[in-house]
Length: 455
Image 1 (spheres, rainbow, N blue to C red):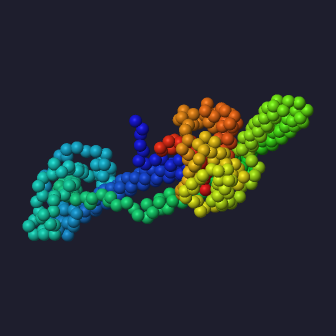
Image 2 (cartoon, one colour; image 1 turned 135 degrees about the vertical axis):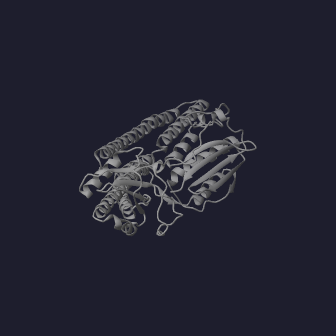
Image 3 (cartoon, one colour; image 1 turned 180 degrees about the vertical axis):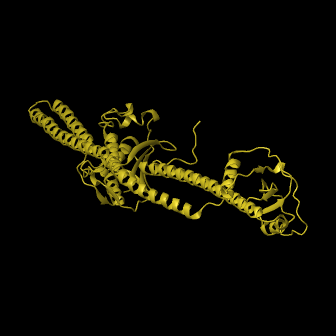
């Protein structure tokens, strides 16, 4: 079963590298912000504990110097939320202790200036809170404090401090986060600029490779950028030069073959004029004409995809009208459906040869009437040459594009041809950046679809 992806990963190297860099940078920034916030909360918690320890030590020092008769009034002054002080409660035994308790006690003793017993009670070990009825500064509906500390004054009196710690701050520091995002954005912009400079030569290499078949004489690639990309560009330029040399050498060989083969044919034609038998002379003349035609078609096929004809901006509708007039003069009835109305960059003579071969193929095997349909899409033009002939079996629709391949029904000289017409047409179509396919026509017959890309 074919898997369908709702969200596809981008295919371009630039976007993939940029996304990978951005995701990695975003992850690092989030992790850094989380660690920073964690350290910030730990630091704030430590400062709060130091504040409570030093405040408790200050209160103990003040109460040590205060007569017992004045301590109750002093406690009323010192009792300020979120703390509540009481004297004379029983000394309770703490349930557990941990490292933070020891650190709190050390800070308390340093601030007090003398050793003093200190214990921190957990909520389940705290006694019920009792305070004078006259103390109305605390809200009775407020839940009891979560933290209780007990210590002894210098005369042994137990001092209890109930403290309600403030909730930990969960807000994220805006200035720090803004700084992190500005840093991430700056790095992303700089990385995008660097990646664009690195991937632009690769895009140029891909464009040059795509257009090489259509224009072998295109300008060479600049051999700049990183060493690997510069080497790839140099290798591509060397390949282009070698291909150009090969094509030029083959063109020279074709010209030589054309001359060397047609010269003996011409001599044979001169010599058969001396033959006394007219019938034999006619037969030999027919064989020589067929040989000359086959040589011409073979050379046309070899040149089809490598024409030196320049591309121009042509009116496709006018070109099709001209080709139709030529075939209508031979008695062929063509029904034209649709117009292009859009100029096209192409080689006029090569495209004329391609259309002529398609119409000739339809005329030869279907005769009579042909439908020619033009369809304009967003970025391509489809030209359909349709007939009501015997058609071509599906298994042979690709084989007929092979050089010299002919269906069994067309091997007679009267209808056969050289077997290169469709091969030349497809070679021209592909040289123009298009495609040629043969399809079965609905209701019987054959449909040749020539697709040309709009540039």
